Structure formats: structure tokens, C-alpha cells
Image 1 (cartoon, protein in one colour):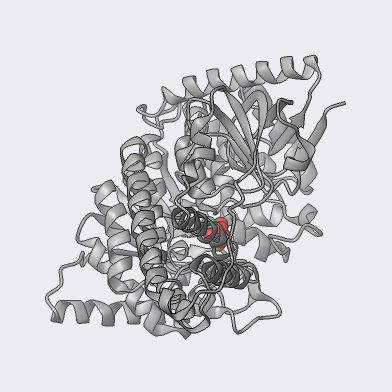
Image 2 (cartoon, helix red, strand yellow; image 1 turned 45 degrees about the vertical axis):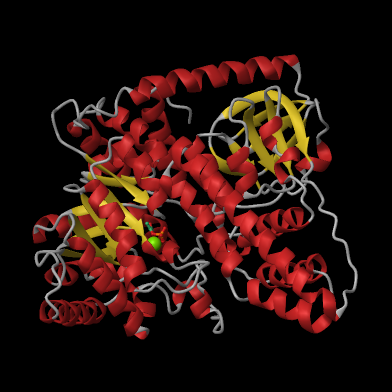
Length: 582
Ligand code: PEP
Ligand code: MG
């Protein structure tokens, strides 16, 4: 029996090949005392190493900018900034002088302290910055000792392999010889690490967070890396290899088939137009979204510009928003204001832990408590609106008062910009996310204060059913097909239609093929999702008739139990779309 290891999919795909266990080189840290006379020479040695390290990082950046994208190359700008950070640069020199220890010793202690501090942080994105520190640390120490870091890197592979590593730094990933790396698997890491982001941009299948893959696999073992289901199979039987090879070929054939759809319109058989938009967390993802034929961005989760970094000021935010807005111009970009709280812990909110974070000071509630942050963000969004079509959206609105107050702040900010002569789109559309039951129930009133609605089903399901969306214990209750959820969805479609407000849906179910006919039947015509789902959803749209979808939705709405609804939906989906793997 093959061994199976589970992990998190960082980048999807299936690859079969030989394992290569990458031992990240352990750098040797010499430790010795120095005399006062040696201080200057030691500091010069440190400054030389810093200079050399910066040159190396810039050269990697150059390579990535040409082979990948400028955004990916920008990841390394943070490495250069870290080298200039007083916490590292000044502090190291100060400690060499005051403690009379050699630079490697001092640097090692500083890096360990920094990493220890980061590892205690709960926010996943921040925690994963440890890898960036370790990357720089390794380079600096090697340059102090005039060793070549990349002599042991993944750039020197000679045959195709699936790389296993405890963890990979962004430069490990960037320097990989793409010709020979089929996929990679790491013990540590999550979806938000820079390594995972790069794997997606490289379209390299990757599984992260397996905990112990490196201790279970040996160099040369045959492995199947199934990064569609997040599973690694070590030394599979010939039958399994055959099965997965077939599956891999099917996936490839399907991708080729689906890719042909990108330039085709998303029209149903009876000519009803359905609009597909992308969900993004960071501007890095915009190019892939556009390549998939999206008609704009339906959800820009702006909080990812805030998580794990110091507070971005107005200009930093403006530049990031403008980048996306100009790129999509004239297609719309819907920027959602900061949605922190719940599972997205932000350093600013760290001191105060709530008992029920999902029911606490989250999303628009947080923004209205921290009005200065909100004003800064709105100013940045408004300024970006001058460069294309921007829509501004507020998350988790649960009362009319909240949208009224948010709009007052928006109006004040507009006046400020007008007085300062700063251009922006005066017609900017302002919307609310429908994510809590109260927003559905009072939807007609919210409609009076907003220009559009976007349904966030990820949260709407959790709040409708009182099920924590990240709890494994009650996951069985978290069901998009619960009749209460379906009734809410129908209700909001009717409210939006009556109020003549555009309505979209941007929760995960918008990108899951099994729900497409149902959502069309309920009346949704604007879907926002991640790039990976877009072609599949378009293929379904192009194969259905609205009247069949309507009939199906009516039938499902007349049922009681989620299990029965699911069974019926699976039956119809399997019959209509036999090419889908359900
Ligand atoms: C949602 O709740 O459906 C949504 C799109 O927002 P998020 O997943 O970011 O909470
Ligand atoms: Mg939400």
C-alpha cells in the first residue's frame, strides 16, 4: 500500500515523478570575540556583505521580472528593505561595537530573535515572513564567509523531480530550474506564503503544510503529487500510477478545451448574458484573472494589503489600487474596504481579543470604529477611481445606520478631494455586501442607500446557520444548500430586482460548478470567483437554458432537507455535465 500524506493545495495540478528531498544548506555560524581594534574591519566586512547581498537579490529580481512578472519580482523588494531596516542594519553594527562579537554571531542572534517574535504571531501571512528573514539571513552569512549560496540551490537539478522540502524560501522557488521541477511539497507553509503565491504564478503544482512529508519520503521514491486534492502518494502501485496518469491526461485535455473558452462570451443557450468577474487578494493576481477572460474584478479583498505588513499609507494604497484599476480600465474593479476581524487578524487589532470574533468588531464595524483608517482608505480608492472604473463596497453591513455613516464619511472625503483639486470619479458606485441575515431582511432599506449589492455567501451561510465557518466541529452544518440559505438568496434577488439595483455574488459557491444552474435559476447574472474556476463555470453557462435553471431552482426551493437538495442537484449536474468531476 502506498503511503498517503495530506496537505494544503497551494497551486493545483497533478504530477508523477521521482522525489528529490531538498536539504536546505545549513550555514555554519562562526562565533568568536573581537578586540576593539578589529571593530572597524568587522563593520566594513558587514557592509560589504550587505552590498553583495543586495546585488544578488537585485539580480534575482531582474531574472524574475523577465521570466515571470514585475509583481513577482517586487516580492524581493521587501528583502532589500529588510537589509536596510535599522533593526538589522544599525542594530548589528551597534552590537558588534558594544559586545565585541563577530558579525555572524550577532546577526544570527538578531535573526533568531526576529524569527521567534514572528513565530508567536497568529496571523498566517505575518508568520510566513519568517521565511523571508531566513532567506536573507542565509545569504548574508554566506556572503560574510564568501560562500556561494546557490551552489546548493534548486537551480542545479539535472533531471525531472518532485521537490520535497521542509520549507522553501521565495528565492529557492525563484531559482528553481523550471525545466526539471515538476511540482513541490513542503512540510510547512500555507496558501498565503510568497512561495505559494509564486507557485501559482509559475503554474507549478504545489502542496504545502504536510507537516512531515520530508521524513516519509526518500530520494528517488516514486511519488504522485495530487495537488487537486492536496494529497501525496509515496511509492504507489502500478495501477495507481496508471489511474493518475489517466486523470492527469484528462485534466490536461480539459484545461486545453476550457482554455478555448476564454475569448468566447458567457451566454446561455437561450442568449442570456452572464457576467464573470475575478476575486483577488493582491494585485499580483490580476494578470491571471484577465487572461481567463474576466469582465473585471468583482471583489478586491483590500485587507490583504494590510495583513502582515505595516499600515499602508494613502499613497501606498492608491498605487496598489491604481495598478489594478488601470490594468482593467474600462472594466470595473470593485474594491472592498478593509474586512478585518473574524479569522483575519490584523496587527492593529491584536491587543484586543474578542470572545466571538466573527460576531465582534469586524469589517465595516472596525472601519467605523477607526474612522481615520477608513478615511485614508476611501481617499486612496477615490483617487484610483480617476484611472478607470472603480466601485466601492462595504463588507458585513448589518444595519442601515452603518451604510448611512459610511456614506457620510465618503461624502466628507469627496469634499476634501474637491477642495484640494484632486480628480476622482464623482459617479463612483457604492455598494454593500449582503453577508448577514439582517442585510437580507432589511435589503429594501439598504437599497435606498446603495448603488449595488454583492452577496458574500461564505459569511451569509455562517451567519444564517450560526455555524462558525472555520470550525471543523460544526462543518457538517455549514451547507450552502440549506433551505434557509436558498430562501435568503431568492429573497435578495427579488429585493434587488424590485429596487432596480445590480446584484452579484462573490462567495466561493459562485465559482463551484455544482451551484451554477441553481444560482442562475435563482436569478443571479453576475458571478465573481477566482481565476481557476472561470472557464468551467463559463462552459456550464454556455450549455444551459435559463428556463431549465429556473425550473430546477423552483424544484429545489420546494424541498426541505439539504441532503435531498444535494442529491437532486448532483443528479442533474452529473447528467447535464458528464465531463465534470464531482
Ligand atoms: C463572503 O463572505 O462570501 C466573501 C466573499 O467575503 P470573505 O470570504 O472575504 O469573508
Ligand atoms: Mg465575507
